Length: 425
Image (cartoon, rainbow, N blue to C red):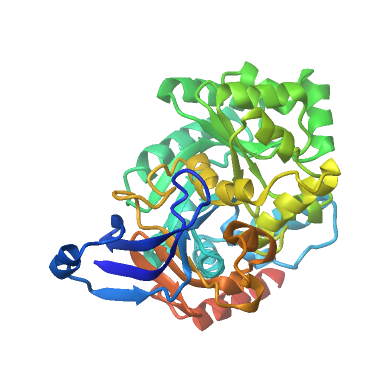
């Protein structure tokens, strides 16, 4: 067992309140939460005891929308509108990628996730075998999101992946999904609805990221993407939609009524000038919210602290209301909400029997003092420099600047640079 003691605990079981006490982990699970008796301490056997020294232990962050292996395009094609960026820069380079490339580029992303307290990613990309191998070797948790596009013949591949990867490893899971309305034929979308009903499962996709996307969908089908998906049964068992910037009142009602999670990606949406998602309105309607970074080619970093700040600050600006989108709501979205959007219901809070996916936030730094309100400190003034330790499935993968993923960080950096240089040739 591992013992965390002498610190502050934010379980997030109900809200962002902070208590004192201890947390013990046993294997990949949380074994004890509270104040132990002398008898319990005497009977316990710990392989390690971690003195928090006043720091905060809380559930880890989850990145609920990303394309991890796109690290190779970080700062490669900036300052372009989304459609130009995607079709003239990203897609041509991605066509050159191999499984070996994906393997190393994913490991680079995992290093960055760990420095920002993230222990799980909801990832949409290709070459899933290489991607999964990188995550398993690193001890990192991931949920693969189906990313098919084009014609309905690709549905068989999606179904095969779902069956295979959901049985592969405790750190790996797979969810039904497709890339977007604008890269899918109507027949593929109809097939997605059939799959959702056959397996009684939620479906995930990019949705209404740009005004152009919504306008062209209306021209094709006479409906918004959300209305189209709902009409085809894609949301019959819920789902998760990424971005949701240009959504109508009817779209929001569908999200609420169907139990669809919305994952906001404010950094990417700001940088690509896509717009500001109506997060405040979503929260008021009871729509379930998660937070993601999107890929490192459009963001360009994988820093959940920056996403939390932007989520809150952009809502205050859009609503012309400094009280909009309070810190506690944002912090909960980046932890509990994101976990639920990914289907990780056993990785959401600190409670006995839950997965030991935890982060230690260093409060003894200037940007976190004085401690008037910890949730507000984390969202408004916190940064990845405050991440002291990141634990996934009971294993410490990052601590005080050191990585413990079975691979030297400098080798990962070298391989990543080697890859991008070869692709440019």
